[in-house]
Length: 294
Image 1 (cartoon, rainbow, N blue to C red):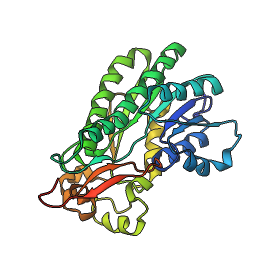
Image 2: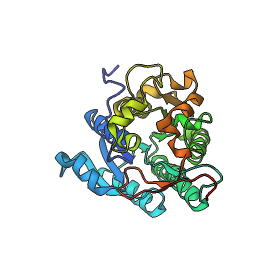
Image 3: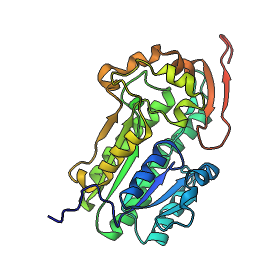
């Protein structure tokens, strides 16, 4: 026994997409606290600059502006880790947004495809290029994907978002089986209602009201709760865990997610249609639906 903690990431290099805010930011900070060198990829360079201002020039951090729906961007992101730090051991495919919202009969197909390009395509591309490097290194690795409890049943999220996250789950399982011979573990986290900028959209007071009594656990979900689980899945502590989807939701799925549809704040996506860009820095395009009008 070396006495080294299974959560010690010293010598490890991690790439985190969507790392400028919310769950990705909390995870990047925690990984660095545990000794890892981290490359953050995010579309919103301005937010990343503010979030990591204290790390400018630091030897354990790099940033790359990335659109995870663009293959060249993701390949460049992984190459940045190898060029700057010599390797990649952990890939956290976390980048996301709300994407297409609205009733099925009103969603624009272009918005549907764009949502899948980002939420599913980004996970595929991150896995593709990280796995290539990990296989070449011959020392295994860990890939963690951000899914959602919306992937597990109807009623916990907009239809397009939910379907995309369900695809992430299936891809996680397939990747875990294919990459297991290389000792590369692939797992997904299914967050519940986590209090991030993507969740509250800047309306913190209204968001806090909307989650009261929604989940069994009395405290609200925080980005740090996801970061701690990401650390477990990225570290040697989870050596025999692969192909799993782990809900981190304060007991919400145990209670049954369908009752979320009764919540007025979360029901709003059924009365509006459009595309939500979340914290990417791009403006959302959303309009209110009028009965009988398309």
